[in-house]
Image (cartoon, rainbow, N blue to C red; front, side, top):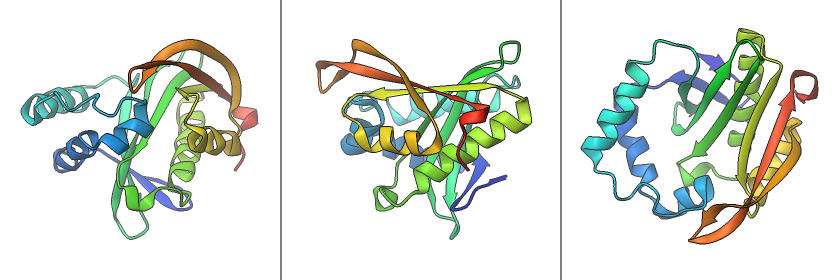
Length: 180
């Protein structure tokens, strides 16, 4: 387990997948997570469970990982992940989704990202982390800036948000940028 100020990050278990699947069926959750409200709604629960269990349970390499986000009261509120880890260049990409809307805007996501970044820097001796979001997700961008991420670029009309081509904001964090 990895401890932050507000959250604890724990390895995903089979029991967590059911809740996670239902979050991914929630149009509002997916809108803020990806820009597309119905991105996951066409995937059956059985197919989803098989895919994610295979990804998590069979992933014996450290190039990617997915952790559950828990509050101090043991509420399972979201997931945070890393992927494309390259130990030679010292880089990885992270992503987050707070699926339990009762915990939006209360600092849990910010703490989860900060905690994950510190863990990745310390555990794997990474030097740089990256993430991206769509340009209208101002709450996420503000949270990432608070941690020390820098806006490194904009990919014009690179993602669809409710079917409309929208800019994608790419952000990076060096180990020396992390704000505790």
